[in-house]
Length: 196
Image 1 (cartoon, rainbow, N blue to C red):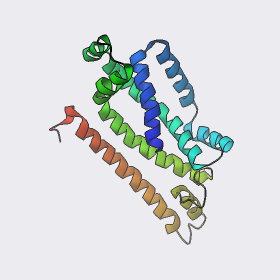
Image 2: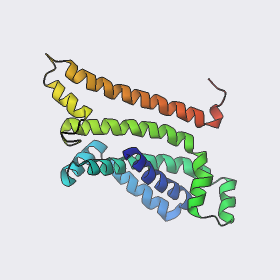
Image 3: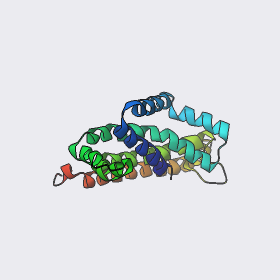
């Protein structure tokens, strides 16, 4: 849910910025630069300590912070496509911005966005685990790999498996998701068809 929300916010604003350009693009790009200047983990810790560590706050805060990276990617690849002739022809036909974004630009920038989706999905896992490890993420009685690792570290000498297994679960999930995202990107990219 967090990754989907981040892509809806960041991808939508990135495509809008790529189409409209001008002062809208400058304003959004500078605002995102300001958000990205602050380290994400520290920013998330600050916001969660202010608003509380509920599941809804965790989803919204991480999605907004994550959407900055999606914005940068979708804006960069969207600007390359927005200057193509077929996009200009759609503008001259009088098509609405939403139609141009969804029908002309989005299908042509899908492969890098799919790869980024896999990376952002892994980043969300790691961010939630980090925040839970520090005690401000998912709160008990809800389970979290970060909480399990934090508890297991205290008993590492005698019960090493208490920290090892949640760490392995987190590492395997991140690795599999990254490989799946790369494979999906390769399958969607027409320039990679037939290459092995």
